[in-house]
Length: 279
Image 1 (cartoon, one colour):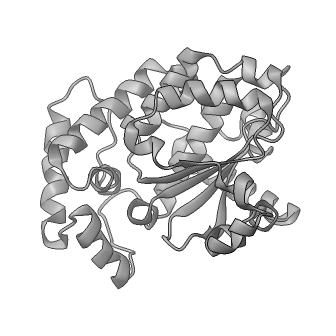
Image 2 (cartoon, helix red, strand yellow):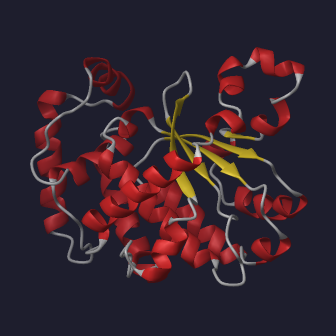
């Protein structure tokens, strides 16, 4: 979507952007240009300066110019300090391709009543003997970048993450050290221009508790309030009747079929090559 921005939002989402994130269409171009001019005077930030990239950060910061500058600085600082996650991101690379084909992260068509894009993450459906968490982080961040790049509505409606840890073993958990978890929390909370609407865990094994408690210690209070294990707790119980939107998005309904999964992965891999080989 690089180059001059062309709005693809529905009239309803345009209005929602005005109400929820302070977007003023008549002022949009001036705000983009203000940030672009600021970036030109930041020699330590090697940023993309197209309209769409800047607009995503403005929307992620509710059009606060100062917060947008802080988030851009943090995003590109993280990219510099974490080259193991951001360098050599060619989706056609043999190892990267094999990891992407596992379907570690998949956008789902189902949306909650609040409208965020639901993303299914399955970071433990891999062999911990041949892959590590740096491989996983690289693949998952590439996919998140692609989702934010391709779907303009996500910047308005936000993202709800469903993390399926049912295949997690102690070998997987051992790779999640506090330093790596802290880096992940900082990047996702302070660097990415998205609106996190929920973090839901399903199929949590015993090995997950230790990892989650460490991750939670690095969460901001706002994010802690959006964490839920409601999928595991409610599905199959009488309380599920009180949460119809959760009931309709139970795990067996959310998972795409095998053919659809491969179609999603193939699209993301080809588009990832288009957008992110140079990053």
